[in-house]
Image 1 (cartoon, rainbow, N blue to C red):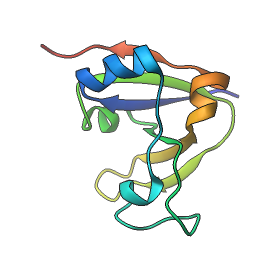
Image 2: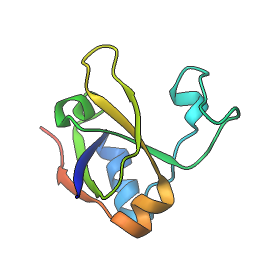
Image 3: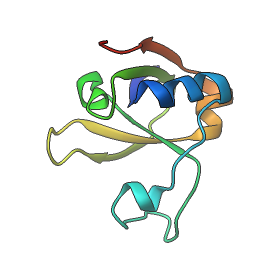
Length: 104
């Protein structure tokens, strides 16, 4: 079963992603110091199951269809589910599509 996840970012970063693929993020930095791996881990794309939640990070929106669960945590503010998907899986296994450019 495939699940649609959403990644929001700025239009500038979206252009870079389309040209150079996702670069991944440090898990420790994006979680205010909390790391499920014990150390800073590079190589995750953070996504949400809620496109509106993803758009709170920028006007450009990507959709990523995954076939397994990468659940990370629930948003404390909205209750949306957030996911940490390995960057290699996004770039080379599942793929991604930019579905929204920006509102301007």
